[in-house]
Image 1 (cartoon, helix red, strand yellow):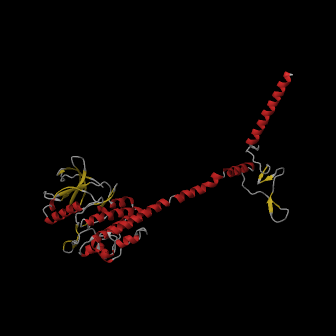
Image 2 (cartoon, helix red, strand yellow):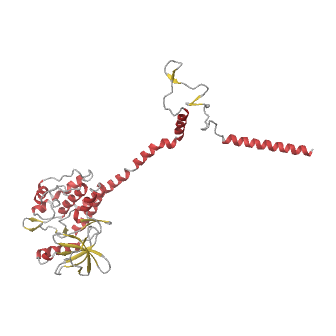
Image 3 (cartoon, one colour):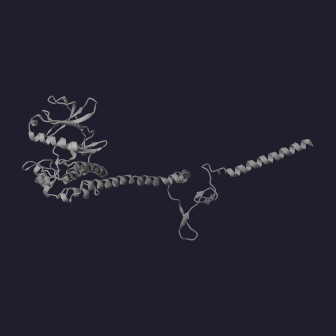
Length: 389
């Protein structure tokens, strides 16, 4: 996550936390990196001064804190402290190191199918805990997902609302991010857990393609496409496209549940990871096969090299002479040489060294040494007997 220096107007201490850097700013306020006396790092959100007196914003902020307190599970940032009665209300959550999914894709490009499925499985499992707490996030998108070393984390419940609530802050005004809003949010209908499933599908499509499934344009254009046009998933891996398409169904009843989504994505992640693992050995086996002839038959290369030296290094074919049967031709052999398996100058079945001599036979050599010692011993014994006489 990118950090910026504190500005002159930024506070240096909030509650019991000392502020060090800016982590970002949104419509509700500014998020800082802070720490307590024990050195525990937190992400601390403070409402903007011009909105601190607005009761609507105070209510929305209180909903975010209430939602964070109710949620249990490892896929969200744990609430550490909060003060809703301060002149500038604030709350602090556990600091999550790591880039957002949005920044990851911008910097490194789309994720592999196995990684998209793994991230989606963890997020959908986290949404199960969110929905069990009676909360709908309503603004799930790549910039609200942090990729920590321990897995993805969902942040920013600033517009979260109880299940069944309307998405309208004011009549005709939808709350959320165009391109990731569900059609029911655009229409102003009640939100349900299926609303977050739609946003998760759009988020996973972004991770797989590096772009929104509804393209680019003004807010009005994007909202129209979400309601009336089908998503574009041409860059999504075949293993993920059907499931993501189901998440982006216009009718909330046709979308999978978060539990179904979690189980299905885990299966896809495991299969895709296994596919990547199995794709490597054939390449290695192919390399071994290519090297095997040289490794198993080095004498062939030696013989070829020796033959080329004897013939002056020429690889031209030998002259052909008519065969005795008149049915073709055979290679002409040099005079005074015996023809044995295509090698001149040796008897059949006898191997020679590069100097033309036969290699020593260890068995024959041992027999000769034994005979030599026996004969020597007999001669010595005979000489000794003769001297005694």
